[in-house]
Image 1 (tube, rainbow, N blue to C red):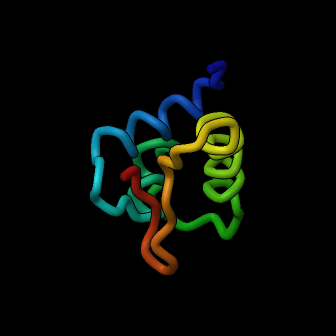
Image 2 (image 1 turned 90 degrees about the vertical axis):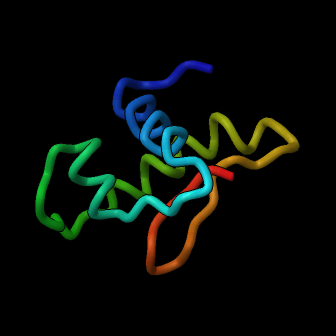
Length: 74
């Protein structure tokens, strides 16, 4: 599966925290090196990119959303 550097970094963060919800703030800090909310939907866009590459082509889904909290791999 071909991933961009940012997609890979996001996937590694989620994978290292399997079954733990990773907040959007934590994702911003660890993937984008930002310590404030930008008001953009960059996280949602990159989660969508990952889902299109690692979830949609396969039967098993990996990336889950906990609305209002963040994302996790199960």
